[in-house]
Length: 170
Image (cartoon, rainbow, N blue to C red):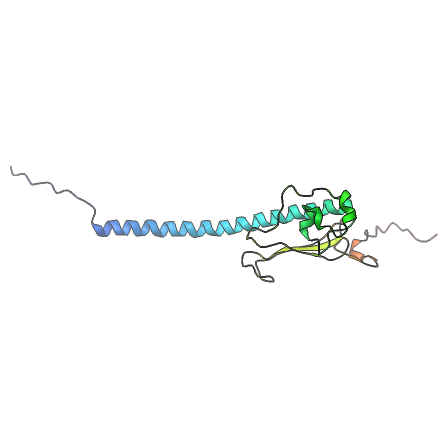
């Protein structure tokens, strides 16, 4: 009987290149998906940071009966030297354990006092441009159920609802 030599079967260079290309393509798709999730996570963390600032502003309001002024900004929540009136320093408490000077994209927080009891807080988002679609902002009132207070008194949206209990005049 004649014996035929066995030929070793190996992958050709072309087959190896095709497998590498498929692996790279799949890796690229996974990388893109992870990058998008990373940006979503940063946005979620920025909103969480904003909630921390809002809570600290509420604590500030409970001690000073006002929200921080625009000039004081959010810095006053961790630095009492930023108070407009140095005589109020004895009332000041550390409202935040560590400073939160910048958002998750390394931009300073935007802050503006709207009235004695309300404020606007914002982050310019990943693009760093104010007024774009990726901004995160909130206008808050420290009073429950309201959005602002005028100098002359409480606006209508801060008044308790009329219960309609027939409280006619006596």
